[in-house]
Image (tube, rainbow, N blue to C red; front, top):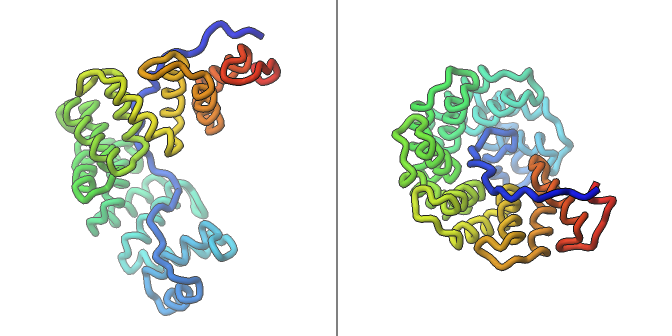
Length: 285
């Protein structure tokens, strides 16, 4: 079946970070046996490290109840990593009934330690109104505190707050400033958002070359929306020479990750028309 046209728009919108159960607080374990020994003695850091191993099945058989037990023990001692990871488990209903309220309470306790990740997480809860009344001002204050400690995700959230005026006076200039700080630390989401800002000419003079550069950085890190936008630029020669092969490959990378219908549609069109690949009617359906 012949498709009429490709999606030409690149305006997929800015992306804001959300909390998910990728227990990103890094394990400091030197070895399984050493960690188990320390955890048995009641060391909270070792208990958290071992709990993360049980959650991921890293070197041990996956055991979520055991992970919860260890996190709960460490949390009772006020360990911020334990409180934060326990909060994530309640937020996602992993081994416990899903509860935004309980997750919020745990993030709030964890953030009191001044841990930048915990403050950013608590800020997201305030921003999204999960477990508490939505409060953009409280969210911004937490994002800013975390960002000043060097947290790249918090920097991205500060930028987005300035972009839309959520909890702070709207300012594209400030948004660009914080996107650049976050992007420079390798944050793929901020690199994508920065590319969108330069593409649209918001907060800075429109600069397609800079947009392409930031999209490329983000795409190389596997960010699907950057892959799609960059694909459309190569397809239509917007800031780069037309290159159907690169466009096809980028659409394919974005489509494989799911969530972007436009990428899947454009990929089908390219299969149908034989652009950047051999014609394949079956793939075009």
